[in-house]
Image 1 (spheres, rainbow, N blue to C red):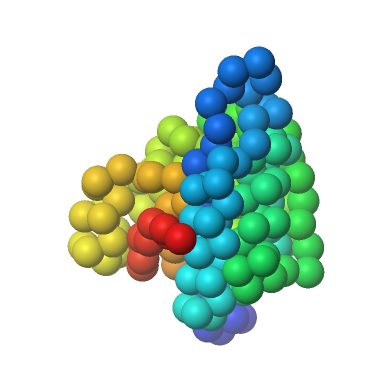
Image 2 (cartoon, one colour; image 1 turned 90 degrees about the vertical axis):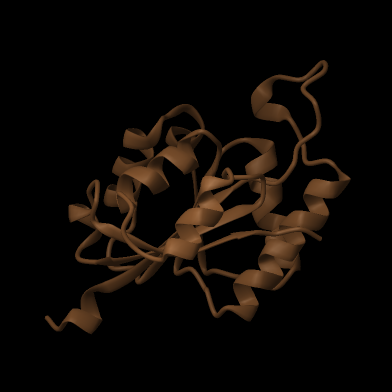
Length: 174
């Protein structure tokens, strides 16, 4: 198999800004107005940059589901969305395992999840490799509606720590 056939893109996205948790469980928190605007802007950015995921793996929480829905209103799209409790409940290792198991032969996978997991997983997967500008931007924090775009050359089942390069980091604001 040629290198080009193995090259993949992984996008880790933190959910958009959510309402405070007053009277609701954490899982049931919704996006606030700013969050809906920012998530829509994230969808516009994904579309403008030609980042079309073959698969979206989304946490089961309300705010992550709403983030992806709003991103789609902004122009993002995919054919397949899987909702995984492991992305809501798990840490970096569980999300990594979910990607390994679910991504199959997909070329581009986007995960909509939570912090600190998204920041930790980005750091662990890239181990400083890739764009210095992207790492500097990520160093300012993995803000809500943040998107870490990584290049990976291999089979998803073999995705491991230090195997990706961070190519871009973007925080969407609408």
